[in-house]
Amino acid sequence: MYPAVDHLVIAVPDLPAAVRRYRDELGFVVGAGGRHPGKGTRNALIALDGCYLELITVADPAEARRAGRGELVRFLAGGGSGLVAYALATADLDAAVGRLARAGVAVTGPFPMRREGGDGRAVRWRLAVPFGNQYLVWWPFLIQWQDPGRDWPGAGPAPSHPNGVRGLAELWVESTDVAGARAFFTALGVPEVDGRYRIGTTDLVLGPLPDAGYLDLGGIGVIGPRRAEPTVT
Image 1 (cartoon, rainbow, N blue to C red):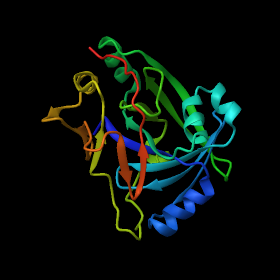
Image 2: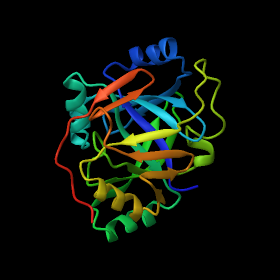
Image 3: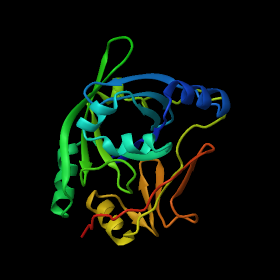
């Protein structure tokens, strides 16, 4: 079912240390990721049923800034870590971008992306970023995999994580413009019932959160700074 929650992006200052923590303390099976050529970042992956978690770090700050990932560089340089973004997958990225454009949402992309693993094999996808920013914001970025049956990290059943986690049941999103957030998801064609959007197998719930800006994932939280947000009509 499309759109669907594709993955959550968890920024970490030290990728090897984060891999050890998610594996040894939190009980996840952590798979190898790779580097993003030209983007200055690299990652490791945790597969779930129907989606996955991405542990991402900045490997080359200068390259990351040139690639438009300065927000991520600043976040990690300032001591931040934790959940910073989420992606929705679509089978027709151009159509999704067109729907947002008709709703007045400026979108950067679509543009091609790839990740190179340690085996030298490249995984490819296309990306589109609403409002030109994908980090520390309430809206998702959009992704379309070139070969989802083969390359998508969430394809197939999740491995048997020692902690028993299988999938993502809920994702809470806080926005100071709840009406605008509703308009955004409506433009994507996602049905809403009482503030909950069923996106694939996951319920996306619009805030405000009980403790403003606080998100928790397996014992790892992040305080998300409030900022001025674009208006969606």
